[in-house]
Amino acid sequence: MTGMKGNSFAGKLLIEGEIECLTGLHIGSSRETSDIGGVDLLVIRDPVTREPYIPGSSLKGKLRSLLERYRHALEPEKYRFIRKMKVGDVEVHLHECGEKTCVICRLFGVSRTKGIVETNLPAALYVRDARLTNASKQKLSEMESGYYLTEVKFENALDRITCAANPRQIERVPRGAQFHFQMVYNVWEKTASANMEEDVNEIFTGLQLLEDDYLGGHGSRGYGQVRFVNLHVYWRSLEYYQGKEEEQAWRAEPEQPLKDVACAVTSWLTSLQRPEERA
Ligand SMILES: [Zn+2]
Image 1 (tube, rainbow, N blue to C red):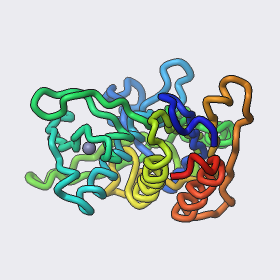
Image 2 (cartoon, protein in one colour):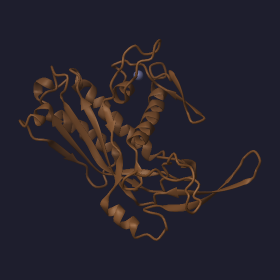
Image 3 (cartoon, rainbow, N blue to C red):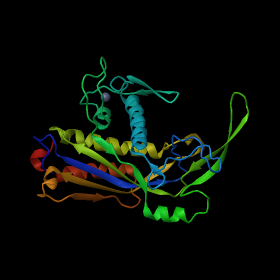
Image 4 (cartoon, rainbow, N blue to C red):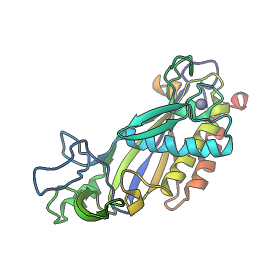
């Protein structure tokens, strides 16, 4: 791999594939109730196409919180929850230290806070919005649910204090739907090759944790179980953008488990490096 040393920009690693919904997926919109049909909880939709999608911020936020807890369990002193934030009426604890040896801060970035973190650290990982694949759009549009590319399910939640029934209609993307996702991991540090293996491993660990967790809302009711399929990875070096070098591509086997994918990708990346660049 060229450009790994001595540059402030060495290249970009693109991680792509499909997010398959194994159960219904509800990622809520800020609009609470629909004017039509009395649906209580609507899914977020692209304002232009009206198609449901997975915001990059939702996916990234979920990966971050899963990895923060994972790292905290491994090294509680290093990965402390420093920042408190209010999200709606829930208090969220975030890890931020700004250390370059910290895989969480490298991947997800840090914004400067007086007394806590002295400098900004840009996030090395970008997560794009995930869009429904054409095949899924086709399949979902043939479904007769009365809703565009979604379905609506009644959930009878019991208020645990008053025991009153609280029936709600929740809109969701049906099981089987696939979204195309893309993440960009930026390699810009001079010491990138040492960090890259840890960072890439961490990204795939995050995907594994997410497969055993949930995306969006109502996870305890079984919503939001996903898996990552059809994974492919591209390396675009600095020289690629100058037109001097080809893009390098790697593709997972159709049913290759994520755990194996992480190992395969990191050894593939090492094989691309020039001998003098190897850590
Ligand atoms: Zn940190």
